[in-house]
Amino acid sequence: MSDHRIGTREEHQAARAELLKREKELTRASDELAGLRRELPWVPIGKVYEFDTEAGPKTLAELFDGRPQLMIYHFMFGPRYKAGCPVCSSGADTYSGAVPHLNARGVTFLCASRAPLDRLQAYKARMGWSFPWVSSGESDFNSDFGASHSAEELRPFLESGQLGPVPSLAADCGTDPAGYLEEAPVLSAFALLDGVVHHTYSTTQRGLECLMGFYGILDRAPRGRDEGAAAPVWIHRHDEYEQGAAA
Image 1 (cartoon, rainbow, N blue to C red):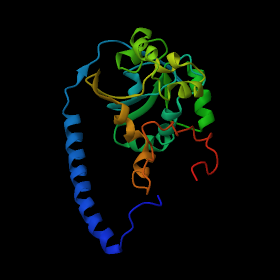
Image 2: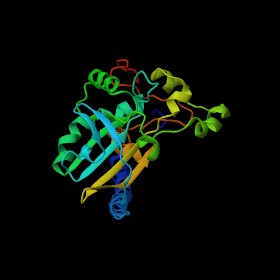
Image 3: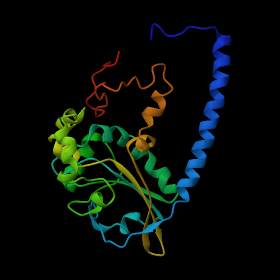
Image 4: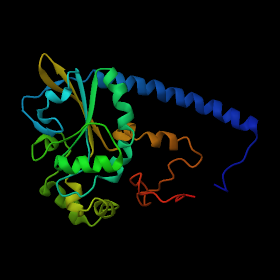
């Protein structure tokens, strides 16, 4: 940061006033997009999905837990994983605190993964989380909502040799790149209307940054995210950081 422009308080305030105009434009645009999301057509789900939960087997409709809305984060923790994805884990650190507030607005929130329930529960205990987490097992649920990929789908990317940080992330999860990429992070929203479950919205990639609260904070820090295109993935599980690592 030593080569950053230095100015007077007056110069800073003038530049800050101009930036504030842009920030307000972004806020209004974000509000407009939120409204457009709510206006998307709802798609009835006819297929029956079953999940393993701490309370026994449940259908997708039963996961609503008496509320009219359900949000599921497809957490990357596949059958071949020994531990959950570090990036998914970084966002999950905020979920337990958010659940009561979401419940108060009629929203049930939980995570779903294809790994066996006992492995999910053990990892959840290690991380100190309390949010609900279910196993979708070998059902079609993940693949139907874009959260699982077949070997055929993955082959072109795996054979390209341009895997970026994937080998490192796969090793962190105790699997290989093929096993790691079988899973994908997706946030899906559902509504229960007259006993019928409807799919209302899904997002992935940078659309998931709303779940990673620390990114919004970093965006306002002096160096921002400090991530380059070729930089290694810096995100780790919260119990794996070295003290003062970024100093």
